[in-house]
Image (tube, rainbow, N blue to C red; front, top):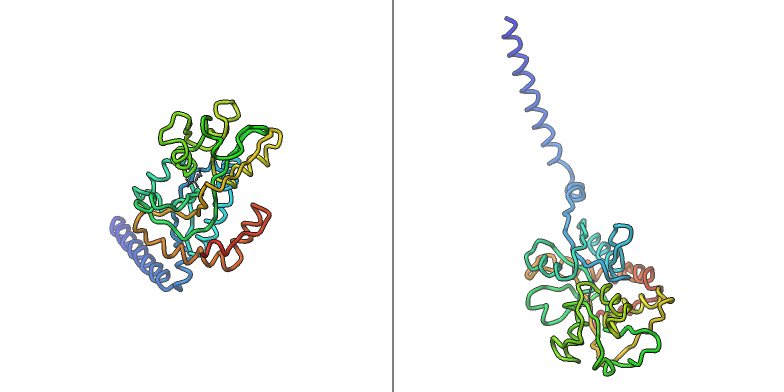
Length: 272
Ligand code: ARG
């Protein structure tokens, strides 16, 4: 008798569980589409080389910088959450080519060579290589770099510029995994100059006034544009381009630019 009533209770309980499960699933599917989208915003994996202040760098364990604020604004506009990870420069290209990451932001110059393997967004930032030297150096132009040791970050357009000037694999070109190591090499006397993106060397010279550094511009260095990097054929490119243009047009880009550089961006040049 006791056994039977226990079994009955068991069946009733099971039925209750099944019914309540049905009920709740009906409830969620009855939710408005917008609520659902908000709850299920897709998270994208973003990779970067956070050793390129003020564009991307680490501050108390966080990845911060102009690029980071910018990509977050674009993702928000496009309706995505981001998980941003510092992986280093060379690994960026491995992660994107293998599609383990959805996109990369890292002051990456758009060029034909990279376009063969990757897709880029539309341009979002203008840049050029410049030369960082100690004050009083006899280097006054790119031409003066001949016969000197020059430190660059491996696989960057700075390296490509030195390959073009001094010859590919020339022993005077010292290549480093990250740009901070290239700067350290010059500071310890192992190189006479560093060649890297203008905002980065300018910011470094300004923030390290005690180190007495000078930045040299040379018009033989190309004008470059940064883009977001995607795996070839990624469906995100179009969505991100639309969002990127919206962020430029709605003033958000200018706001972020002002915050990091204290001046107005030249937006027209991005649209040419
Ligand atoms: N703009 C240069 C290039 O694309 C250098 C970028 C380096 N970026 C970095 N986060 N270290 O080659």
